[in-house]
Every structure is written in structure tokens, then in C-alpha cells.
Length: 257
Image (cartoon, rainbow, N blue to C red; front, top):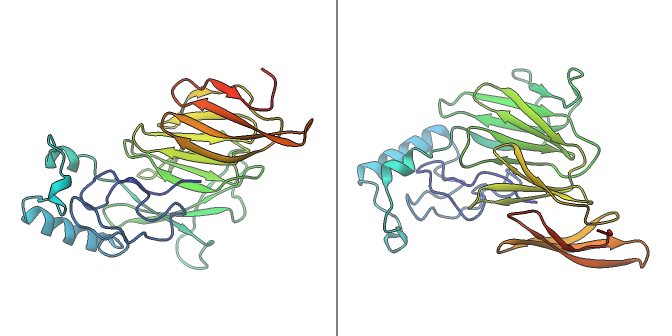
């Protein structure tokens, strides 16, 4: 499962992996090629982000690794992509402080402790969301690099949230077991052990046909294809499959076409 933030909090450069880890809790301590921010050090507080950005801009936005600067790179264009919020997955609800904002797909009031995420705005305002789990599966939070929204999957239940207004945009899924992120598209791939769905900006782009009778293994992305193995109860074996990332077309798998 892949989640977290993919844009540098200081300069907005898109990274190849989540800056605070796929779990949203553990910084990678990698260095941004553009501004030189060390993820987990300069970007661990709003004030630290501001200070490092000011130093970077005072140096005319020079690249930390100058040889990796793209030919047509624009500092001003990149700054328009600065994150509108920061994320942190919490181990549970806090015993003190403001009440968390509850999110429930069924809309049945305040849920018990679920998947807990802390949101921080560039103004240093913080709030905590408590997301009711679904029927079982993945739990991950993802900040889409091209939208002022966040996608939260809590125990298989998907939520699209606008952190600036603390509001629920929509719900999706319910039994999501696989979550993969494609930062270059950008897009999110979710699966429930039976089929896959491609989500962009919180909206479904395509849903594949059924791939497996029940369950999948070794699900990965290679180039333009999603590959894995689908369980076949008739043979008690795992059958290879491929899903085209652009169209959702499936080849192979254990479920009859």
C-alpha cells in the first residue's frame, strides 16, 4: 500500500516516493533535489518550512542538485504547486484537546476510534479527523499532488476530504484491500480482492472486470500495467493477471470473462 505526501512542503517539487513514508508517520530523511529540504528535519513544523523556504528563495531558488534541474523548469510555476495541507497518521485519538471531526460513510453520527489523521494547514492551524472503518481492508491516507483534497482509506472504506473546510466530499469503496499510487499521472488504484478501480481527484475513471474469485497476491505496477496473481479455488492455485492502467482492460486472472 502506498500513501502519504508526494510534494516537498518547502518548494513543491514532486517526489518519486512519499516524503513521510507510505504510512504517513515515518519521515524518509531523503533530501529534496530542488531546495535541499531533509524530509523529517526542516519540514517537521510550519515554522521550519517557512524558514527553509525563505533561505531557498534568498538564494534565487537555486537547485540543491543543479545537474538534475529540468531544462524548462520554472520556480514560480512550481511554487503554485505548494501543498495546501500537511498530513500525519496518529496511533489513536488523543485524550486532550479539541474533539476530532468524525467521518462516517453511513452518516450515523460519531464513530468509535477508527483511522485517525492529523491535518496541518500552512497557517499552522491543526485539526484531527476520525474515520470510521469499512468492512475490512487497507488503511492509508494520500495527498493528491494536483488537488486541494485528500483521499483517506479507513479499513477498506474510502473518503475524499477537503482539509481546508474540514468537509467530506464523497465516499467510495467499502472493502478496499489494495491501494497503489501513480504520482506521474496522478492517479490512485484501489482493489477489493476481486477487481480494480482507477480514481483521479476523487472520481472514478474506470472499473475493471472481475479478476479473481477471491483474493490476490503480489500486486505491483510495472510501466503501464498492473500485475499480480488471482486465487482460483477450482485448482487451489494462483493465476497471473495484467490490468492496463489506461483502459482497465484485463488479461488473465482466475475469474471467467
